[in-house]
Image 1 (cartoon, rainbow, N blue to C red):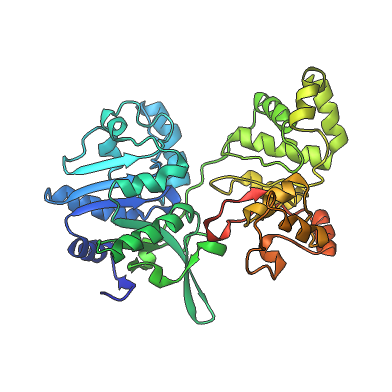
Image 2: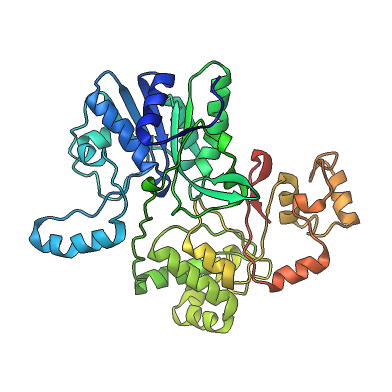
Length: 413
């Protein structure tokens, strides 16, 4: 067995070594755009396009292409905008052939989710599309025969040791990699490849991995490229009115899920207004007719008061709205790593401090297992905190959430 990882001087040698190791049938998985190892993916595509004996199946999240124009007037507007926003981003080589339905017979590209409207006139892209719920993507990628995973990573040197970060795309990789390693132990041939980009943000927590997490690493400054960031769409009056209604349907202690776009930005603004300037928020509800028409629904489902318990945020990605709520909204709800703790807190059987009532609730089979999960100490492992810390948190405007340990689901208390 080859010691991990192998450092490659360029993407050409990395792809050549991978083909020699895995064989000429490659199912290549790669994440959403900012996490895509563009140079590695393009080199796999180039090799397969030039060699019909290589069978390449690319299984990927959406591929975001540069703006396209029709006619001189559109070009004059879009070309400088495209250059400013995504000029340094190497475009994925398979994208245009896929749009034109002109991929070679030995290459297949399966995307789950499309950039809106981008493939309306591409029968091939639509035929090879995989309609997958995000929670089922790992299953579907493995069923497709994934044997190579290529991802862009960030790099850091700390205390004389090298650390890599899965950065903006840790979610699927953290679930895929263990299953790929398990297949390897059963005799399968797999490769986990990393392309270092120093422009990527170094994210901590579970996103940090050691270099031997990968089989091969391409770490050359010439492959660094700036990240693109399309400007936010302006929030319309209609977005604000929709968000006003939505904000009153979120209960204290509840869980909003925010997406990308102007509507998510509007919901963020109204949630902050509800919590920080509740009197003005109440006037808006009244003047918009929300309290008059939907008073019973708001009382049953949501509320109009400040968030005393706090909120827990759930999303597949850290959107701007969550950062805004974390910085200035005074939200302090926590994701607990143990299911029975969350359920007991939700029903009011226990509080966030360890008291005799906590132990009594644990003794009741209806609310908890027969014994406290080990290790129960330190109790912060399970989300409990001393009373003084809880008081400080409620005043410190912290919006909390965490990835559950041990694969258990996360719950908002």
